[in-house]
Image (cartoon, rainbow, N blue to C red; front, side):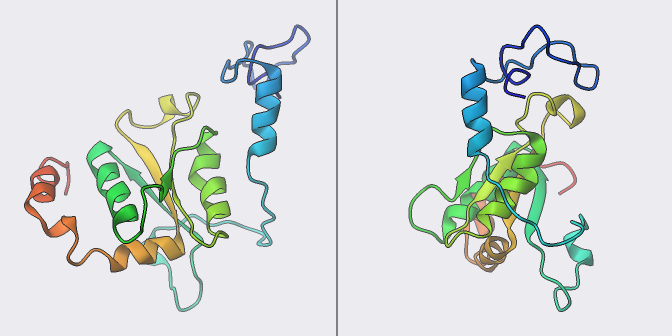
Length: 172
């Protein structure tokens, strides 16, 4: 895999019809080091279900991660809200990883942290052609989502600056 992610190798077998290496890392060594740095989590559940949050009965189950697909204006608001009630400036990360890793794996791992962070995703070059050009994902551990939701009243979302931006969001 480290060769597929980097420079390739003469005897590299085809991966789903892709003939050339992805070139996401400069060397196989860097690719291997990156692969070893990606969180490894043990998921005890047999299935992971993606469902609209409005359809989740939180009396019966608690979501692990909430995923938004956001345009730049929406993403801006989510980043500001994620940092609104916290000290510092690092409540959101944008790691280099596959689309599924940034949408699911990294946020699931963050959910186990004392101070979980939200994750900007879908920045994977190989996944970008499969989603709308103006969208990225913003995945947040559920506990952090609740924190963000509680911080909405009195925040910038009620202010003139945000209202100007919100007017240009399609389908608001």
